[in-house]
Length: 267
Length: 267
View (tube, each protein chain N blue to C red):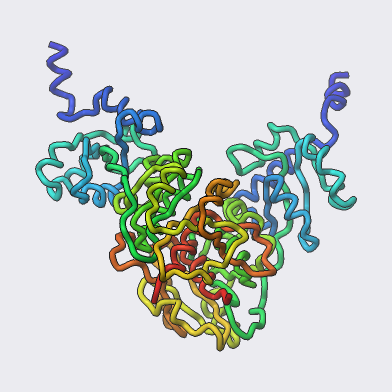
């Protein structure tokens, strides 16, 4: 009798323990690697991500209010992946302080295996050991803004699918092509691209010829910059000149990336 | 007898309840306004700030280890302002998750009353309603890098002396001249400067003439941009063109500010 009553009061698609454990595992790098999956949160991100036809969606966890307002806009196959959850349940699986009404779990998109052919301009950004997820996300966003085809990270960089990277990317994670290569792989696959190392001291990027060959821009770790090996492989070392009277010691890595990208814009 | 014993076991400069209450009050805008004071934390920030001869330091709260290593580098008058605190006490007054060994309380520097004369280039950045402390701090840092003399905030912008602004500024808060003016005041005081409004749609900043007059660049709120009044007052509306195929909807306000600043650099 009591068992029967309990079943009736449960919502149809209540979050199972297994689902909760799985989404929680995706908060960690290990879990994301094992499942080759990731998650993203928030109405805007959800709408953007679910609109990507190539994205392999596993499950959509959403509050009733979100499902009522948005469920009918999803195609049948996506609608079947909705799991109605309570606010309390959402809190358990969310990575945000203030959980949003929807959290989508999807397979990680395929990594790129080659550099996309280009005759000039900025082909790709290579990130060697970027550690701050906010910086990585901001770099994806600014790369997307300036039409950079690819962002390639060294294996020791922060994971593209870290929840904080995803949030900071503002859905540009769905647009930019991604790859994880070490420096040797980059050197093998760079084709006709020049590799430009970025540093505090170097040729002002304004002075560089950007019209005769495509470029892959290398950005180093926030604290230590690029490795000696990256400099050895590079065709040029470029910098962003500051004011002679400045006191600021450096530019933030994401800020510098944005300024470098902008310098390739031809108006 | 017991009272005597208690006095002996207390460290000489133990944090008083009054001091604790005061520093805590500076975490809030109201407290900072009442006292016209602020605080900054961390070894690097402390060294930079304490090296500024104009800064009116009230108190230096530090762990014994920091005092041993750095106390002798301070002049006599600063050394007298040191209060030795325990890690537990530091935790009470710090704004950081992981408190650092030193926290300095100082009077807020005087705000600027006029625009500094300049014949061309970027004179000042005007921030209308910037809300995110990280953005404000990053703008101070990038402004410092590019030698912008002044950063002026509208009254509704986040407080320059918010602890998160201070941290993000990476000590550029000590270098850049600050002012808080509304738009009417800006219009009265702009002298020979052109006011450039920044927006998603406008003349590409690359195409603007930067050689014949000085410029004050106006940056709007993160969500809503500049107000209609700011556009009315402006001499030009400028933008940062993205790639035609981009999906990113916008650039972060601090990122955009950095790219605009860089466009004034003449190499």
